[in-house]
Image (tube, rainbow, N blue to C red):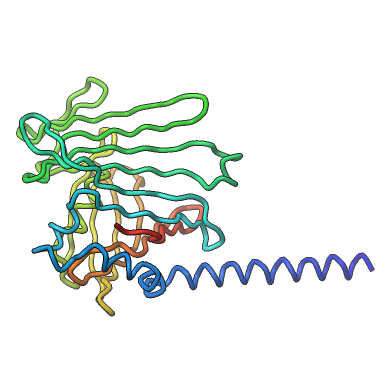
Length: 264
């Protein structure tokens, strides 16, 4: 009797997992995501802007994602946001913000939150600062990088070092990519700075179907002296606007999906 019970229980668990995986795989289809946010996209009035870049960099542009692990469950959320304009070093600066935190049920495992803040020149589109704040109940830790684009210099924790011209911070590079022109088969290459290391952010549009670009990308150290980096794919809606519907990042523990929930 006990054996039959455990066999039945095992079968129920397997079926439940299969249903969850199937449902999440269905939700992670770009066309399904697009259907869910279509009215939100229309509300952004993309036809009123002269270019993708104007739409992307508009003040208060916001993307909110569900962060899914292994197609099994939503582990957290991530928000990318253009917070507005400010004056910095006698120039107009676009202020970018991002937050990431786990779902309530997972806060018992890790009750932390990451907040990113960056400034990029409105006209120059050059990074000027980048702040990374990790917040837990026990402490708050801040990392900051200041950029001097005119001298191709960056300063972190009092240490100054040379960077390639046009190097961006990890937050600005996302919005910069969305504002680029895409051609299937033609690489888009950007440099980004993480800590004191220069990384290459390389993306190739592989196909376009139903107004959705399918991009394949990778991030790797410029000097290729370590295995640090990641491969990813992106599905970007492209019809007068540029909306990232789905981002899939390959990790050693399995794929992580960022599925668009809200666009404003």
